[in-house]
Length: 83
Image (cartoon, rainbow, N blue to C red; front, side, top):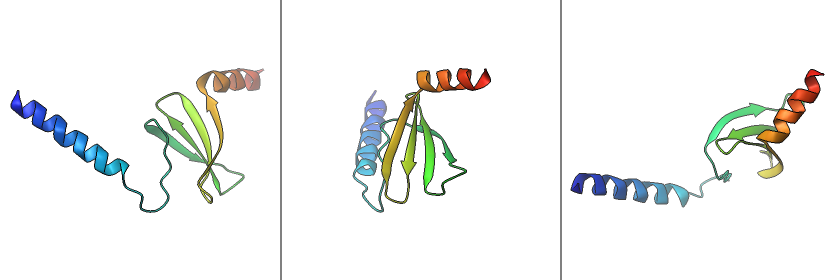
């Protein structure tokens, strides 16, 4: 039991230290990133899919969130393009 508590305290301390890292210009997503795809038409834009079912359009040049799409919007868009 003591080992389990020690491991969870170490994990919590490690995550806290990582969250305070401000080197560079980190982007806070709020959920685990699952995939990153570059925009084929604009080299400054990437799309990031996260574990919460969102796809975010991010301008990496200025570190700015441009748009956020949820999974329902993307499903509707995919169905419309199939017609």
